[in-house]
Image (cartoon, rainbow, N blue to C red; front, side, top):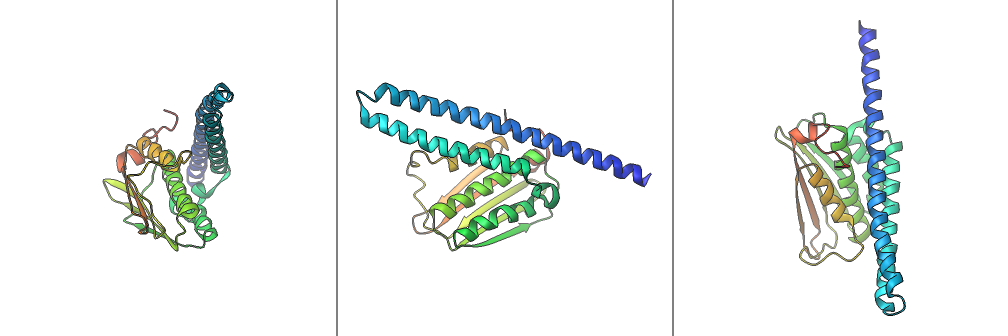
Amino acid sequence: MTEQTRIIGTQIERSAVKDERERIARELHDTIEQELAGLSIQLRNARQRIATAPEQASRSLGLAEQMLRHCREEARTSIRDLRSTALELRGLHGALEEMLTPLATEAGAHFSLEVKGEPYHLAGPSEIHLLRIAHEAVANAARHASPRLIQVTIEFTPETVSLEIEDDGCGFDTDAPAPRGHFGMLGIRERVNKLQGTLQTHSEPGKGTRIHVVVPSEVAKRSNGSTPHS
């Protein structure tokens, strides 16, 4: 009976991994399709304006270049998710540590990860979304904020799962419009919406940045609660 239980457990685990990889593949397809549609619009604008409004055409080409760069980064991240076994082997805490520590280290910052509360099982799509939200936030800090310290905290309560990313970098004006072509916060916001969660961003120039995401636990636990391609 024990051996039969082990075999059944292995089959269930393999099926779950297969489903997760298929989900990531769908997300990769949808992301590239959306990005290429936007890229096509910018290129069409540039072609129409290149003779009569060369400055506007140049801006469209510049934005198209930024969109293409973002599309490539998203594709690489999704492919890394397809290949990575961090979530399968080490869970969300281990995957956060494995993926985020190098980002902070390369930027010359100390990385700290803390888990509060008693962790419980989250659905695969929810783990991927939280992992990607943290990755985008830490990458933004590492690239643009020159931080000395990046802290990530994930907290489990019976009602919610919360994720907080805080750095002591240069900060920014949250009321100012985002620079054209900067898609990081937009991607974070989209993932939070898919998790039916809330997002708060606190930052001031010279005072660092704190991003706080709160997701209902019943959604985070539900495998179909955050279907990425919907």
